[in-house]
Image 1 (cartoon, rainbow, N blue to C red):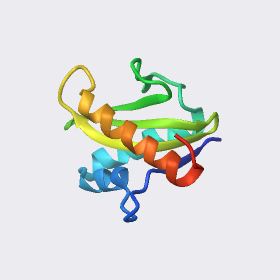
Image 2: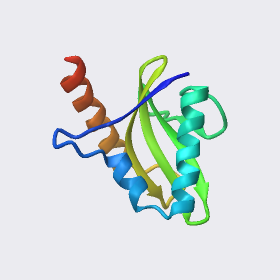
Image 3: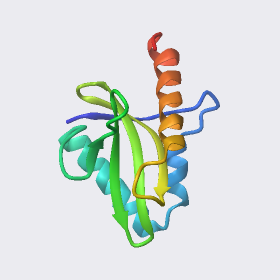
Image 4: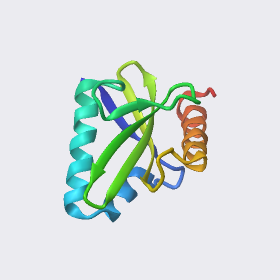
Length: 118
């Protein structure tokens, strides 16, 4: 079993949780089920996970639903500890660069704040 941590801003806000709270209940249920699978199977298991090719240590959890396609970008802190950084509704085939940049910035902040490194 893997450990899942939701990235938290210094203010205490959790962007992925906030995204989930904006989703329709059926969509939220599907996304939460995907997170539970990720926790059980690991960062690269299953067809719903994909490494972001241009980035070291960043992955995306892909969830298709009636209202579109949701993505959660995460990184592996250790082989069994994943940090969910950023969630958004995808509108294009390719993951937008700005969404990746948000996740990269949050990963850097998380590592600096909680682990004293970059």
